[in-house]
Image (cartoon, rainbow, N blue to C red; front, side, top):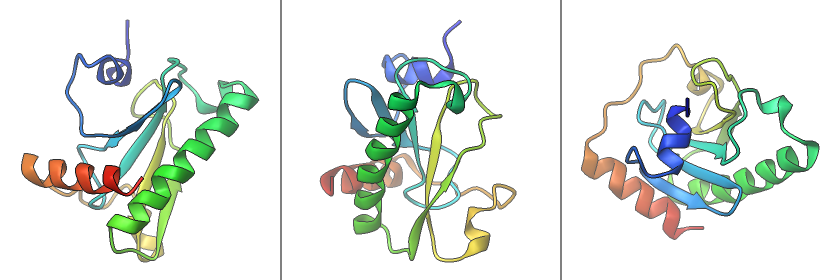
Length: 130
């Protein structure tokens, strides 16, 4: 059975896409810690990120770096924090979260509630800065 991320990649479930290439897909997290919170996933469905081939993992980080730079240009923040948790969806993914302090990357924090328009605006702005 395909993961929710595979369904997003295939267009079966709508998303706020940021970037895509032949191997990776980046889209806004719908339960974000901050505006611009983005997920980067491999198109190859792999449960655990460290089960990816070394070359794929390296390429995923380079892809994430490009997305991160676009987030930094779009969302006021000190850095883009990186988190790999891997428990919530059985499909490897990297969280890119705009942060201004250490506590901003705490997944126990309340999630933002954004409107469809806000999600679309943020996605378009980040995509425009790629």
